[in-house]
Image 1 (cartoon, rainbow, N blue to C red):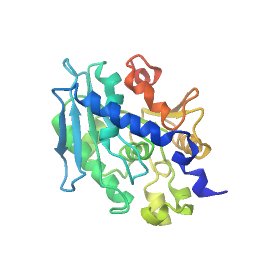
Image 2: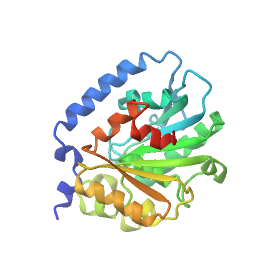
Image 3: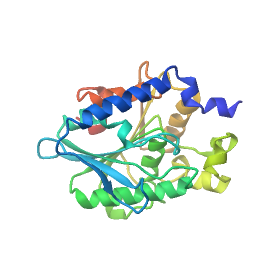
Image 4: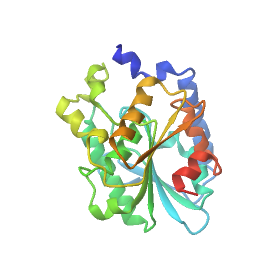
Length: 262
């Protein structure tokens, strides 16, 4: 197998760069419509250890924490703001952290950063937490519900549901890619940081993957589904690695209603 080709999502999906560019523009316009939002709140010392707070217009029933993807090496929370509209329409507050990127830091350090972000957010809100992550963010979301997560048990217990959308759950195949020159994963680190190889402490887990997802990422979803008895896998028809997120902007979409159990 050509492992570089198998895990090169942007090369595999037509117009991937255009999709991300359009998202950035739409997200910028959406942020301008949120006068009560708070952007760039610190949760750590690193310049990228910041989060955005998007309050809903009514008394919040819950809090969603959305963790962006980008292979732990690109993108930030600002690309995805507009996709949070579906949650806000359900009277749910939204929190969106960014995090340091490889190769400046290792993946295990990114996991620690997200742990700090969740602790800071949990201290700010008393609402039940719904954790959602996409791609590498799916990996980070699932790491937060493992027995080895860098979270206090009190914070972890407040996560009522965790959802991985097109996530990475077994990092061992990445050792065979050129990307690992930046990740610097060893086999021991890949095993330690793979949710599929860990014990899950949150019993309500959802996995979403598009029917047009690249095969390697589809396999990543089935791997976690097979590893965790509590996980439920869902497929989104005709969706690929990026278009699977579009329904998040629609409060009545199957994806949003499933994440929030509405």
